[in-house]
Amino acid sequence: MSKSCKGLVAELVKCLSESDCVTVENRTFRDCAKEQTPCISSECVDEEFGRQTLAGINPLSIQLVKEWPLKSKLDPAIYGPPESAITTDVVEMVMLGRITVEQIIVIFCCHMFTKGKDQWKEVYLPGWDSTSGWLWKLAKAQFLALDSGYHQLISHWLRTHCLVEPYVIATNQQLSALHPIYRLLKPYLRYTMKINALARQGLINADGIIEPTFSPGKYNMEISSATYRELWRFDHEGLPADLIKRI
Image (cartoon, rainbow, N blue to C red):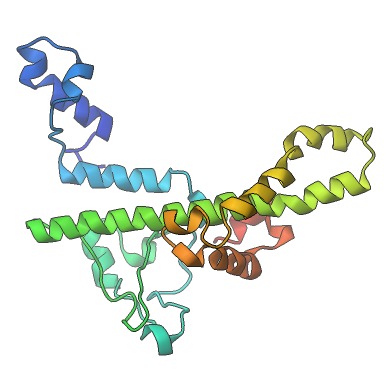
């Protein structure tokens, strides 16, 4: 973290403590926070954004980059050339020479594509003018929308709700109600099938609540199905196998 940014909370407290609202009017931080426009540097906001991304609710999508330059696996006939615009020069420029591409362990990125247009052909970076500044904010908002969609559809729905159904069925069919493992699992498996059935009726169904709410839209269930088909393996669900397959 740079010397100019000690953390978003610390910067906010510093901003408020130096304001007239606190020093002159002697009002509480809580009251002033409702009226005071935060004077936090964009650099600090970006660093906090990065910190929350890596330490946030969806670490399951962080994987080691195994191929460089990045290339998409989407059909080139539909989406254009697969080569990414995120090049070595772009990455090293953002890192300000503090680390090279060869030294990068983890990279967390998102991509936006539209049929009929080249994919991965626009890289958004922080800028000093208003246009590039707002484009950078929109890019971060787009990233969060895609990341939340991945979290809800893959990490939450698929890997939490769907994949536990076989365990619920096997536990109830194969174990006695007096079996120690059955008694251990029962509180955790209770109501799971009912909740999933209700979700299929009103949440993830066509034209349900999920489609107009989450960023993938009508492709919500297609993404979940494809992820299950391509990525899920029973023997990779526990530790350390889950971590090993990502490196």
